[in-house]
Image 1 (tube, one colour):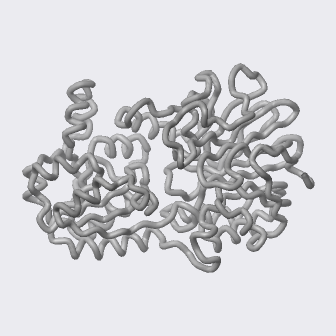
Image 2 (cartoon, rainbow, N blue to C red; image 1 turned 180 degrees about the vertical axis):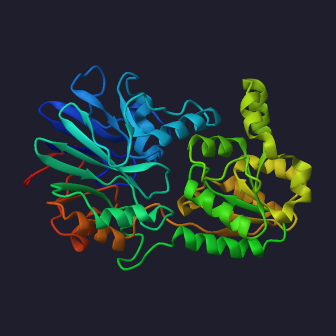
Image 3 (cartoon, rainbow, N blue to C red; image 1 turned 180 degrees about the horizontal axis):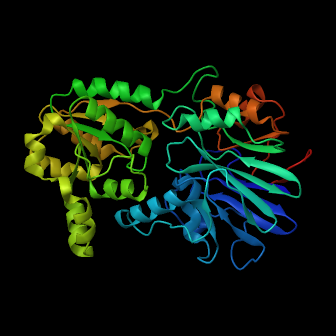
Length: 418
């Protein structure tokens, strides 16, 4: 078995790995680069053959973040795609709310953690991992008596941290090569750890208690660990979590009754203007009815502001202006700081300044700290560690044994030296 990192050996995002054995091929992820201005076919890695090639058996997506699946928009619709069943449902539920034509995975294999399945000469075993994307997996690929482990993106400080502890306590054996993500390298000291979701919850409780008016918490509705954190902090402070139809659809699509849902007594639905237009134009009345048992309106936001946490999106700004409900409001930014610093939310920044709303940042990474990366490598004890999904692959030999870096586009054997 041999491997080629088409993209990702020296960058975060845009991941794409090809695995070949006896002339048959699999792709592991096909991501959109984080710095891509548009999603175009020109972004497909050079040298990657996708069309009309019977040797390519399919694409295995580790998790539903665009930098791992976004270029599916440019593959033949007949090419099977594997991913978690809940992740597949989430992407389909989210698509009608997103601009343009977001990429959707073709039918293929639905992962079950720890259950192996066969694709040609390859045996694939997915392992559910702790990550900021719901239903994320690491992938063990076996062929010809050789074993490649692809970590995908993972962490050990989220609400599914037990998955990491289970992996290091009972790791798969005999791993010949480990493709290891290293997003945290260069961002965090080698002995430091990221805050846990429980830490974020505690900090958010403090902020909510200090907020006399409406609490605006800005995060991705697809970061379901964070949505749970916001819900728990709101409940602890006597606040009701208000979500929009997009968030309600995603939460329902998980199929997980333990996650907050629109019909829960301490959850309410507010439909912003853009979504009301969409409901009318697209005839989404049945979908609205499915989530409207606790629907609230602008006057409710104004009357109940001090007892409400809004899962904020920029499209809420006009509605909140018209509702005149922002006296005493506080904005909590709970996403990667790079989006804010890079100008993605300049409109929100100006809106906050206009209303005199204070901004607080509360966030933690979706990626493992260097401490936990070392624990992971020690547990799996691979024959070699190959850097991927990191801006600093040169840091790997300082942290891990048997590091073997490979450049984008270079083919290398899973077992033995290149």
